[in-house]
Length: 358
Ligand SMILES: Nc1ncnc2c1ncn2[C@@H]1O[C@H](COP(=O)(O)OP(=O)(O)O)[C@@H](O)[C@H]1O
Ligand SMILES: CCCC(=O)OP(=O)(O)O
Image (cartoon, rainbow, N blue to C red; front, side, top):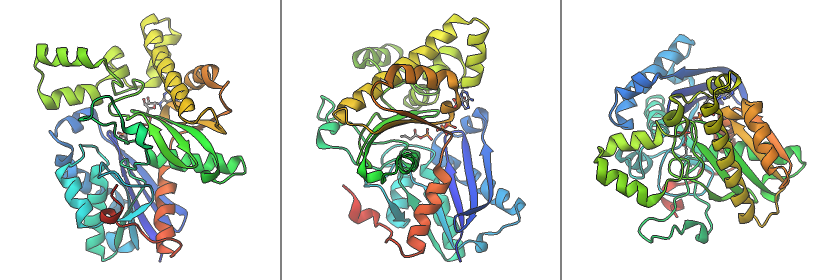
């Protein structure tokens, strides 16, 4: 009675897993090529395509929708809400379909889970969506009232790894302060104050540049660039979010390829890669100030945390602040199923999106 399908779409992959309770029975990552993704104008246009790919994958694995007692999905760009597990209902679906708070691959997750859950007559949940907003009021100020800073992050992985690090220190997640660093295609660097994301760069539009994203840009120069070059809005967004950072400078988002180039003496690759390290360390320093320097640990997670080159270089710049823990990859699937199970087992109530909106 605890069989679940976990659905986690990212910009270039859709990760799937089937659990019975906390035991993983099957998992698969469907990797999507840049050319497949580029076929679609908007993220929401990918809905049927990704949904069919998922159905095919679970069928090939010998499962059908009726086998599942609940579905759990990575939540998308919803209205700002506190962390936790939410029951997916019409209000969530309406906002995600409309792209009310922007476009992101994770917007598809709850819609697909809801479609599947309706067919099977069970519930769908989301856990710690990218829209988790636990900002302090001062963190919202940008300097322009019309453009407040938004709390959007890799909340799912940050919270999952934060819990693990706290446990390894013999503490509860909500007892200590940490700086959480998700190093993926986008980069989130968060001040976790007693388990809450009280500040974070927005991986889609601020902080360090990353394999695919530009990070903070000089505002006036961006305005001039737009007026001088008159780019199409959708094209410019793709340039900033999908083709910025390492991709813009070096033509690849692949850290392994860049490290090979560095090993064979490519000085430009070294400068650009080291520039990303520099910006990451600078942002960690900023989050340390947010926490008044009272930090039990800094953790580095995400795909790039597999790289000794990067983690050693970051450690060299920030380990004076606190011990640095390395958790390569992501803990997202386990965290999603745990969030769903807490509700299924009656250990906590699923939150209601409408009444939790900030
Ligand atoms: N061993 C490695 N060395 C360097 N970079 C790596 C390594 N493994 C993965 N990466 C990089 O990690 C990034 C993807 O991280 P991931 O956490 O999977 O991304 P996302 O958060 O977007 O799902 C890519 O830039 C990839 O090249
Ligand atoms: C807005 C932060 C979430 C994010 O950027 O996720 P992906 O790296 O999976 O696109």
